[in-house]
Amino acid sequence: MATRDPRALGGMATPREQHAARYLREHRIPALLHALTGELLFHRPERPREFLVSKLEMLKSTHTHPCLFSDSNLDAVFGILDTTKQGYISLAQYKEALNTLGVKDFDESPEGAEFNKISLDTFKKEAKSGLLSFPAAPKV
Image (cartoon, rainbow, N blue to C red; front, top):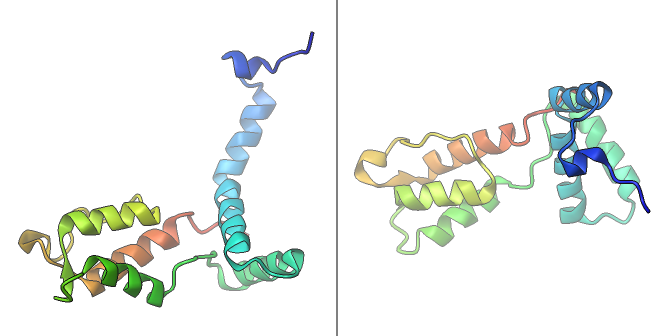
């Protein structure tokens, strides 16, 4: 009979496992690996290891992190939502778009919310802010 991991059955993690998990969270390693994997799958470079090394070097020198969404990508998302080309989207569209992009922490009542008209500038500002904090910029 195969042995089972006690944690899979609801058991507790050992102190060493708890320490390791805390270390990974504190240094945002899962977020870093998630972002790097996303970049890798998005770009699909011929030489993935060199690509990853260059991304890590960029992180080290700029203290930023990989982000898959450029200004033109955000413009395109906004344009898809602004079907009548009036220059704004509804508050509900704004919230749904940011959630879809993976942004979890954003201003729920941004400029224009009182009129249900969120501008491209407001949308991009919140999207960029959220995307730069998700995953939170890791310490490299």
